[in-house]
Image (cartoon, rainbow, N blue to C red; front, side, top):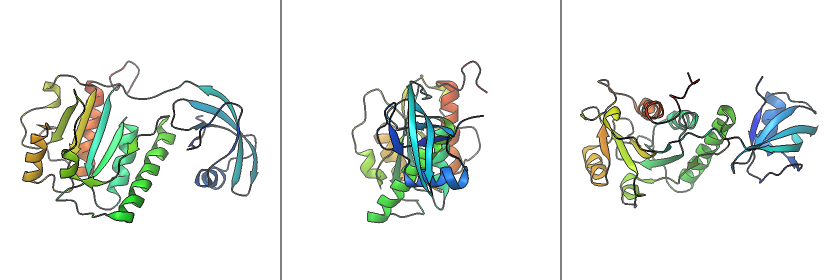
Length: 249
């Protein structure tokens, strides 16, 4: 049976006695019904994980003793940044959660012309903080010890004007593209641009092309925004990542 895993922002160290963050403690007590003496795993996002044991519980306050640090990582060999145009409803939560499970290294939410959702100011900052929490929770579930960063929201055209790291492969999906992923030379540093409902508009496609993005297609069918990025991530992991390793399903 897998032990419960929890993310703690506070820097952890072997032998330390810590109190779990309030939301984590509530989940441990009210949902998982953990009791004193229960074993669990903690990680702080700085690499590796810690064996831990619950010392005592005071209502929703959970005090934990840390054991040894374990040099365990489950990161993909690919560094993929998902540049995702804002999606309506709870689609962003779903996309971020599943992208973390698929090994994404960073998520960049962008405001595109066809985005249904509109965010700005404090409301945008709160949503980004929420999405960062979604990413952390996904790491708890899937075994990752390094939490992907969710970047601050900005307009797509502003993000496209930023400099790019040398050697980065920049890809965007387009149903009418002729190139496929399998025809590309393998890369380890990838930026994947996905449009909102209705995709990127022609001006955005042109701007992305000018910024070095190559258009590729995933088969003959048109994929929804919440499907497209995840399907591309899975395909990249199968082609160049760790999905093809011996023993993986």
